Image (cartoon, rainbow, N blue to C red):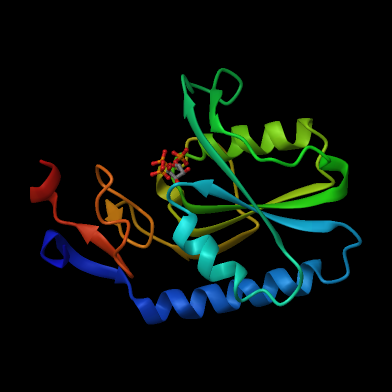
Length: 181
Ligand code: PRP
């Protein structure tokens, strides 16, 4: 798999440092909240990041999963969210939701999801992404927490895939264009 990469963009050690620093900030921000903190892992990409991040947060955290995709998004208002798997909690007024993503690209998926979770009445909704690609943003969306800003390159590994491959690489690399051209 490593031969399919043109370079390693974020090493295992850098990922470890980023997740530790994010976990510390999250812990600090939520430690005095009276509500339950729910880490909402957006499948599939953020599984690996979520697993590492929550183990570094030293306050109680519940875990939920959703699988969503966005389509028909020309503008946010015309965009639709397609929910393939929903979270199991429905007592939204009791929970602080921290949406965990591996990457924010155009921003459509996350902005539609945030709209939905707020509409459902969550006590609060914040976002945490490992990778942030602001160059590709189509709508104004800033994550509350992010690990690294990355250039507009095709990245795989640590949960991120190309045709379902490379998710199990322990670091993040740039896919060699020969693989997809
Ligand atoms: C990726 C990523 C985000 C979304 C970001 O998921 O995990 O959910 O795309 O793109 P956007 O900002 O342009 O909306 P993907 O649909 O590839 O699914 P996966 O996580 O199952 O691979």
